[in-house]
Image (cartoon, rainbow, N blue to C red):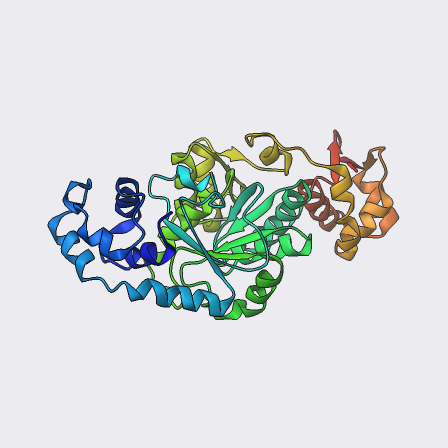
Length: 360
């Protein structure tokens, strides 16, 4: 197996890129020393120009060792694409990262879905992301997102609230907290989730890193759910990568005049699955998932007070919304909004005539 320090040094060569590094590793899979690599005939490697060969010869092999020392200091780890622990789904990317830096107590094993969206969500977008993330985790899925403000942070937080696994894919080093206001979320992820990056420790959150990291978000996931996104949102890049991989793309509709939902509406018009409840996602995944009543029951005690009171009131027989509002002494419009969130979580079902019943 090619040593990690050699791979890390190659990653630091300007212009080499993940695909060319993989080609080098595939051409010379038994190299274990930097000197052996320099003595090999790199000109036969597809895509390696004379300029790149000169840059490889000018690289400092101690760079890789210094990064390994830093990883050890952090308590993080580095995995490369040739190792069995490297996620199989991510390998399907044509430009899959050669290696990943991983920090945190969680594991990359299991099935994940990406939940992404705008950095400036409406209250509707934030609550919808929270409700759907709760339900997806209750059904056995982990949540992958980008640690950004807004929908990303909401999805990570909801997964942690439900006791599920969540993976934050960073556009900087795994030891860099960006945005800085997410410090508490970062610390929670270290304890109960994962922070992942293709960039070495200490790497700054440069603007071009974020579109690049989006391919990893979709690459780790069975599908990508876009909750709220404008036409210029980076979440749409994640959705495009998912489409390129032949994986499901899901979008939550918003108000027809909301700029923050225009991207979602365009996705739906282009064939993305419209999401009104969690089953709209679960049943489209490969393999298909279903809501698991036993798991969902475990999140009922953690519901906000208005949702919990409704769950305690309802049974398996559908009840008209007017009667629920009267019995619970609450406004009908507010009640309908809360019932929508519960329906998205798979906890409530709706029958004809705006009648509602417990699903679990």
